[in-house]
Image (cartoon, rainbow, N blue to C red; front, side, top):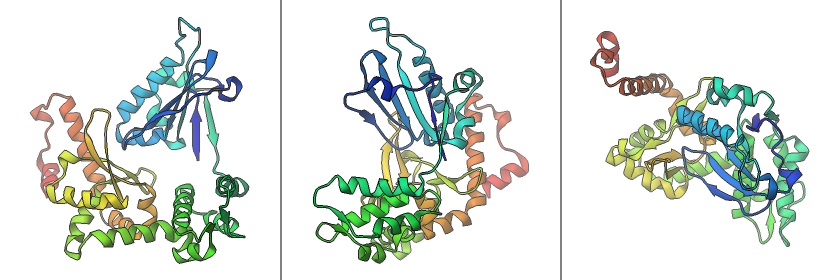
Length: 325
């Protein structure tokens, strides 16, 4: 389930005021997608998508951005008298990480929970883009088959999106077919099959331990089970792992991007890989205990640096022995 936040504390008014004009967006790994639409007297509409990813990577910065959005939505333009509006999307379990005492009251009436698409809406999401392209067809019954297969899959929208991409790549003349869908294993097999094929095409047998060490550092254990992406600074990577990451990048298992500060980072292409690629899932499960401890150590290190690197706050005794080990 996702939630939509209107930091102005009321409807964003997009339909009411007829916002128009081009969407201007900026997206990089480790920060949300931010776009705005210009719209007459109503001012600007700011749209921030997947805010939970920013909150997971940089919670303090995400809270500051959230506070800024609320502040902007309470500012009247002196020339036009318009008030900016903002729409923020995030997973429901990330609200606590984003909200502070200063922003809680503004959000009391501004949260709208969005349930996952029902079967009819999911079918429309599959067929309507195809219907809009003259001469393109979905083989009879295929859309319903995809909807049935996706019904109980966690995080199903990325899987449907990926399956449709594979169908497009393997279309026969101008038709998306049952045969192609069957060949790549349907919803469950599309992502896993592609990931494994891409991996095997690049990684040699003797490089598998290096690849394992690389991939497990690009995800962290989530508090409620499963794993979330963890972008890693390029500067922190050893040369061999970095070279392997660059070789994997064209296959879209790994992507490169930059933070707001310009730091180059490496990231998993999609969080769904942690759930639906068996090789990666096994690696993450095997290293979960270590990775949980490692993430806690990283938080301790950040707090130590913020405290002025006092020697009294350094690890000692058995805690230091565990860290060295």
